[in-house]
Image (tube, rainbow, N blue to C red; front, side, top):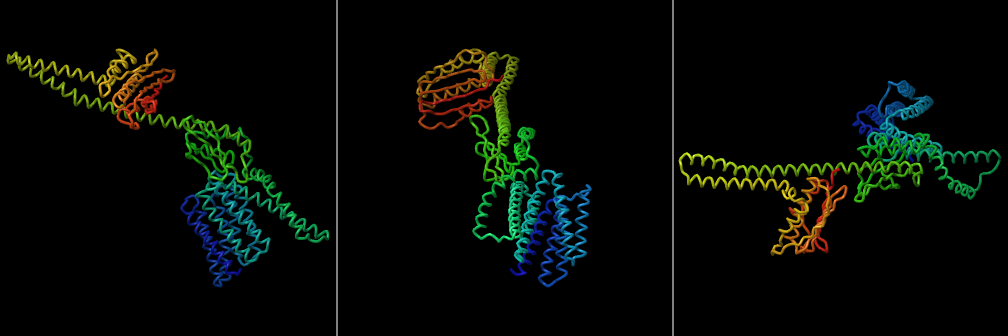
Length: 583
């Protein structure tokens, strides 16, 4: 591979840094780091261009400015620059001063190497310190930086260890090119994947791999020291196969250790459950985030009737699902992602989820009941307003003009009496009485529309029997109605009116729209509800369609928080309603 490939890789590193920095400028809190990243990219790109045109010392200076001064400062200032704390201030001074010294003595490889070592050690220590003190948002961003930087540093070390030459230089540049995009992801989409799981997986793999390489090199050195010869290829192949069988078990052992070392010990089940319970409230997203943080899980989601209503983290391939008890008519579940490399959740994790799941189910039920209550209240308010509008219209358009007519007739009668015209006065009195009787009938109709008088005079059962005797089919055939009801205490007025209206409307529909000649009404009172069932033995011949009557029955049941089912069955029509009894 030629030197031009290395220059192209350097140019790519500069472009990656510049573009990522420009994208990060849109995030206000990260602008200082983004600006330094843009200038570092420009310096690196300029160095590549100068090197390609024979710039010599100028290109070297540009590379040193970009790589030894600006880039370390950009990483130190990420994600937000802080300098008031002594640790932050000293880190900025050390990294900035080392970079300046490297620029001043840009021609000395020893100085650049020494300052690079100082910068690297200071940056690692400062980053670790910031992660320990950072907020949750900044910790995610810093973890992305650590992942990309560790991956790039490992690749550079491997390339140098293998002495790949120009190939190693190109590989190192490509590896460093991933750091700037990782910084952008850390501030814009930090939870696009479980970065903590990726860090643990990378550290575990790198630790195991370095351990095996070190063991192999140690054994080879011992063999040479003892005067032995290098084993044959077949022997090395068998040793490699045996080592491969132990690689995964070693990773499993290291994963727990690394996870605890990097992110702290995982809390005990009761402690984790207590933390999660404190975050369970009206917002399920906060509860899911608390579950993920307590158990260090990559993903958590709540599903209701097969649809995801809330989630946190990035979805992974392997998940564990726990059912949530939401009642007979709804299904819910809590889905959590399994950590990378694990086959299932631990017993402690299962214990925490088993404690949390009922609380989440209770939260979902409360949200559903609150939503139903809002809908029911809205329907009730709408029904009340419609009833008020009807009363206003009936009073204004019907009773109002009639009472005005009575007043005008009384005035005319007074004038007639003054003119001593008994015959005309008698006609006016007759008209006045007729108008008064009609007005009284209008008032009775309005009162009946609000509450049938028969309910107060006869009671619900007797009033229904009286109404049923007057029902006739279109051909004049009477509808035979069997009323099944037991004695019960007085019902609430609203329940009594709704039951009367529903039964009368159901029987009227059976008489008018079906071939039924018999109908049965069953009324049952329990401690919590009043159940109504009206059945007939007729058939309409077509599927039932919701008309004004069926809609009215459903609205009356919904106003009280109840339910109504109206349907055609092979045996005939059926209307079933449940009206709650207030405590």
